[in-house]
Length: 453
Picture 1 (cartoon, rainbow, N blue to C red):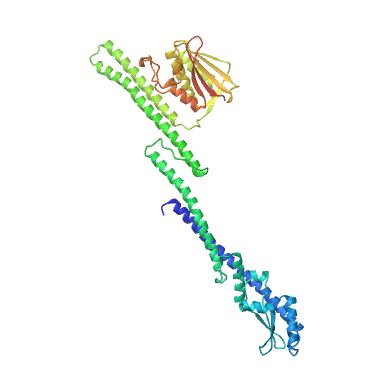
Picture 2: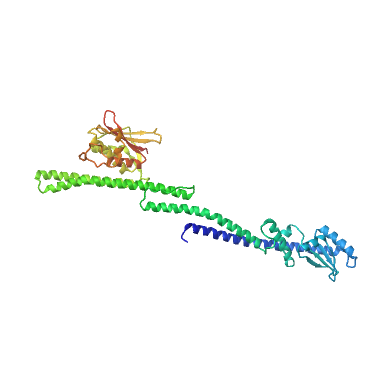
């Protein structure tokens, strides 16, 4: 069997069948033990009654009418079917209950009295007769009584069935009912698993937008929901990498084209032109190196797990070091620390400062502040301010997209369009955010917010 639902269903059926067989065997053993115990008790009781009657009944020489009256009286007092035969086997008297039980097919028990007469008796109707079985001398009667009791409990079973047939029929009916009820449940479960399998195959074949249907509230539904979440993340990651690769390929063409042109002009250039061409080549090589580095970092950030390697980072010291590189001014009320990856945070501050220096003129300020009243908990805000032309309102979100440049900012201005995108990725990975605002008096203000340590 290759189908999962057939294997599950076969397992359920086999276990149910074993349960029915073992239950029937245990129940039969229990009934046999009860039957044996009941027969022993009944036999002892009948023997005691026979001994009592042997002493209480009139002798064999008494008139038959006197013997018959005494036997009927004892039959009523003991509530036991009784009959009495002479020593040569002629019937003297039989109680009404004895005659009735004989007509029903019950087998009597015989006891020989001291004077040679034979006393016949039967098991009385009652709890013991219904529960127990029969001894060797009364098996037929007791089997019929047991089957009659079973027929009263289960009207569909005929009282003439062989011993054990009723129990077997009950177990077979139970087996068929449970097996029939288990099939649709098992099939529904495996049908959902098959749909999930088909969805995974379609997704693996390249249909990244495919999602599986979620039905129910069990583990299979949770698995389908987890698959949809994972598929959405993979689709976003693949699309991001495709876009990054396409944009990087486009950005690589410009410095490569300039380098090719400069190299082709070296042979016929004058010494002064050669120096300029070498400087141009060095600039393009540096641009290519920066582009490759930022593309690799962006790609690595795209596949990082949510849990980064975090250390206590003195953000004021870090900002002071990076600001000194570009001649920016740092303003802070005191030491401010955050938990995060020092290398990534340094890269984010460096990109913000270089962007402010490149597009915002010579006046660059860095302001650090701690806000303990933020709704999500204490945060640290790093503001990088410049006095450049500013960013239009409709483009303040787009400047954080990879390779996006403001209109009019040519490649000669420097940068490859990944700096602010990396800042946003680093902020997101640290549970923070970054935004661009208008600065009073002109210019832009980039605000990087991170959870405080």
